[in-house]
Image 1 (spheres, rainbow, N blue to C red):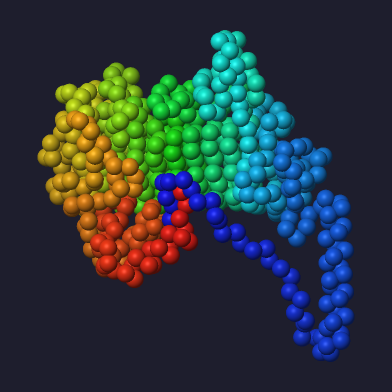
Image 2 (cartoon, rainbow, N blue to C red):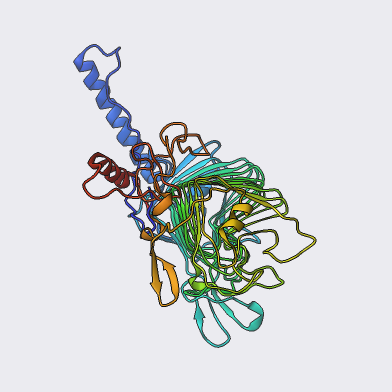
Length: 541
């Protein structure tokens, strides 16, 4: 599975299918076979030479070997390759034949009219990036002479004498009904990645997108899906998406999530999202289906927000922080959010007492349900480390409704939990309050996560140590390989590993939350070896 540490970029690339030289059953005589093989070799060599000279498709697909974006007339550039694919009816393959980590500069790439997108994809397409990186560095010079770029962030204001040095570029718009697969093509310093038109599909595998900056354009989600579209995101890393400044992100200029959907389907598996703008969270979905499976949200300022539709958060770990009303899991307008075998932690290191009539404060973190929305927890752990903010409604609390602030125009939602779920108490809520609020008289209690005390502030240990379960969370689920087997909501297959590569069940038991405890050294040697093999095969960070 994945790791929250720096990602191991060694990926398994499927070998290219090769034509067989095995003689057919009709070739009986060895000399006839030899002559046929000779003719085949000659024909193959000739075809390869013609393809190389003509810049046409080879057995590997349309070849990209240039390190600049280019244009439709410059052979070997990515712009040319996509133009070739768009001109070919049916499915095509683009193969980027550059050394892993090689940057493809988008600085001088022309964009579509009235957009910052470099291209559109109008025919079914597979892009094998082989570790190449779409690279940009949007920048501007402020009126005070300070250069701001993707690492030195600020809000660009064209009307205040800020001078744009390099505008932000976005990658691709996928046209209606088109299916695109993108393997191992990273991006650094662009503005968004793909935009899906109605009924289109994107499959993104082993893709890292970082340092997205909107200078010169409005901010975009890395993946934005419109009505009927489907985005399947597997082993994805999103890092520093639409941020403002670190280490204290605050007045972001982008009301855009890292992933956005409207009447669409988003499937996120084995992925890491960190450092997303708190203005709209990691995933912001309207009347959509979101499946967030075996994945991690950390170091981000926003969570998963569903307005209508449904969200399934399964076998996943989220450590949230920030003062925004979206720095949480949020369900509104009759949305149904199901959290299963997952851990939700709130890191208060950067939280302020920012509650008030605007409703953007942290009261109600990390869960919020209103306007008929519901959040339903199963064998999960929700935990907060608190400062004492004072009495309600300004004190940190779980609450259904508008942040605990009276508002006659906003109806309540609902919470529920099963007996294998842990909800940590807050300074303003007793255990009995929580039992009533979540409709569960047997909520798990007691110390459940390792913490570190610094003076009077108790913080989580860094991940993964700070999310490893203790106490009542361990072995809370019985018959975990049988009637209580953990299933992937996308395809119904069993989930066998936690987000750090630990086997999810041990002797038929499973822990509540997203992270499985590790047995004492020397025990269950077979389990340990199996887990090690699984980590090497599947781990991404």
